[in-house]
Image (cartoon, rainbow, N blue to C red; front, side, top):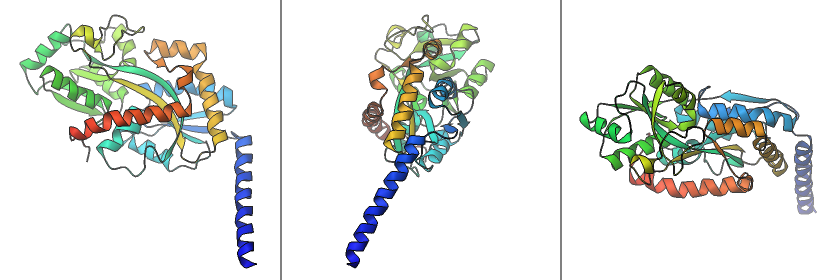
Length: 327
């Protein structure tokens, strides 16, 4: 009899918990949603998050609060969301660096796969190489020659330590036989500020971050690490055209929630993201920034989960073979 009562109690508790979750999902959202951007305000990731936030607010009927929690190359903000309650009120808007590269370069207090619930892929953009306006090289070949004149003395800014731009910079040096000093920044905004100010010679980061400064003549762009020229900056040659064929590197953005977030809430968030990305105004602003919105069939949680897995399988062996670490 006692054993039967225990079983009945357990079943009742399970049903009760399921009922509470169902009610929460039905009433969600009932208060503002915080979207953590693990980089400083003004950078490319922050800009994209704010563009998407307004149409998401309209779709969900609640304010979307963007909170910049920078530090440790994206670890600080990622850890906060990983530890948050799985109720749909704390999300993270980030990219390849935090959810693929970081766990291969250091020990984390969370798991980028097991502690996050995929919501949707957002956009994809190539990395590119730019220089200060006064840099003498006129194209990529001249830039390589200029770097070889003084090995190890020129400076190139990158976002974070062992991030996507760091990896691309390492490959660039290997492919061109050059060497230079890598200067890590907490985000794309301070890197761009120093590049415009001439404090560093070059920058390797998301092309979307410097389109406006390029148009204003404040910096020089040498190449985009892509197969195709960008509509937002059609004058920048691809790496194939510039002389380093096949040297491709893009940065994709996505949204995640803490693991265990109810499926109904995940579905509502995904629907809001898809609605936002279908907005013509969002599409225009993304295009102006050099961001390619993922096809609609690739905007699902399952597609994000699969893409992250593929990227992990691609980058982790490369990182480990090169013994890249931030410890």
